[in-house]
Every structure is written in C-alpha cells, then in structure tokens.
Length: 69
Image (spheres, helix red, strand yellow):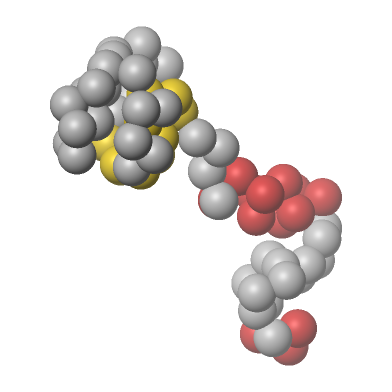
C-alpha cells in the first residue's frame, strides 16, 4: 500500500497516510482535526517519470544515479 501526503487547508499541516491507491477516504488533520485536507503530489512521482523517460535524477551524483538510462 502506498503512502500519500495530505495538506490541511485550515492550518497547513502535512500528514502522511497509508492507503490503497484508489481510496476515497477522507482524512482528518492530525494537528487541528479539520476534515478539509487535500492530497498532495508526491515527490516520488517526478522520479518515476524521469526513470521511465530515461532522464536523470537531479539529486544523485551522475555516476551513481539508479535512474540513469
């Protein structure tokens, strides 16, 4: 099961939740209890796209990057 990040629209806190990819479950903010949370774009997503397209990761030394084509 993947981990998703949600940002609270009320207080701005970011919380991670373990859930299935197609889940429509509403999450409460762990900081303020608000139900007004939105799923954030994962930092992992751009790496997958770069790997699939043969691109290189900007955070790795070029000689050691596992995402290099």
